[in-house]
Length: 238
Ligand SMILES: Cc1ncc(COP(=O)(O)O)c(C=O)c1O
Image 1 (tube, protein in one colour):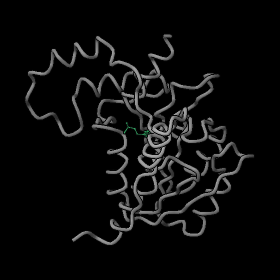
Image 2 (spheres, rainbow, N blue to C red):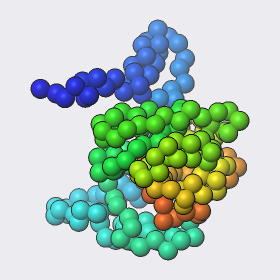
Image 3 (cartoon, rainbow, N blue to C red):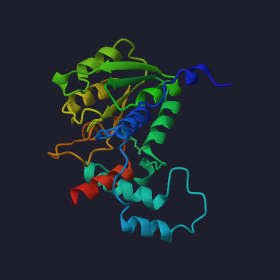
């Protein structure tokens, strides 16, 4: 009943890590869990209040997301990124994971996935049915792809479209990308779009995060999420 490429998918490695750590805890071992990025904090009171105040609303929302929320996100992003984003440039979803998955479904080209990278990118890319180019990163490059490495892949067939997943600050390495300018040059030169997963952007020790959208906004899709943003704000206010 299921398509073979779905049957061949391996179980989620974050769930596997969670199961293993539970077993180790049951054996009395002290475990520091780095599997789930779930909030250990209480939902802030004002967020809970607003949710309560709006629970009566039962109408379908616009497909792209609540207009007022999109306007707020556009205003916040414009200020942060020094670029003029409009509400129309923003899409709201139940999680960035789902929106990234939809991007895989609609995109027609090759996916460039740096390795190592967040565990969900590869299975989603497989389900998206595009060709996947795994790009092995090196310690010397801070575990990010270099412009040269990306160009090497693209120059084999310049007519295709390419979608690079760039996650800075990075899960799992924790590093911030310092090759944004050279990567953006490649994006400008070829049919390359960048999905810039900036979900941990408010959480850098030295506040040295910069978005690739500062170099090539017209080639960048920024992805981020409210839940992780709330964690980061709570941590910063401690
Ligand atoms: C790098 C990265 N991107 C995206 C996500 C997904 O976040 P969400 O679907 O909650 O927006 C995660 C979750 O752990 C993540 O680590």
